Length: 99
Image (cartoon, rainbow, N blue to C red; front, side):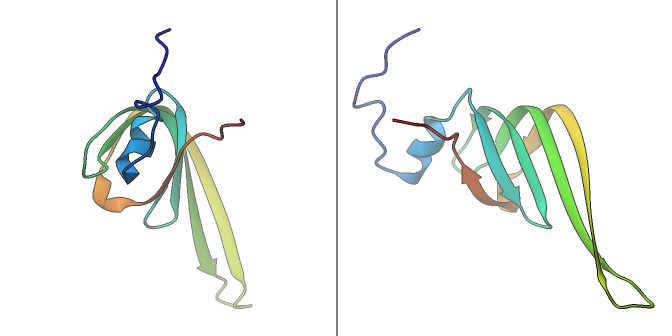
């Protein structure tokens, strides 16, 4: 494994943090209450991303017609590869790193 120089590991721009997360599992929050966790294979300046080994969680909230209570449902699925369009991305979180 090639060693990373201090210059290569420096975060000077927001996309640098994503560059440092290549080939690592990241968390992506999307519009319409969708969350992804997967391995980042590629990205561009628009935050279009290709993720592998993805777990997608979709949360829906419905109102019961009789009791007017909120019913929260989550559905999960796994996808081998997923193309994520950048305009739906709200948040990208790199993997947790402990010093």
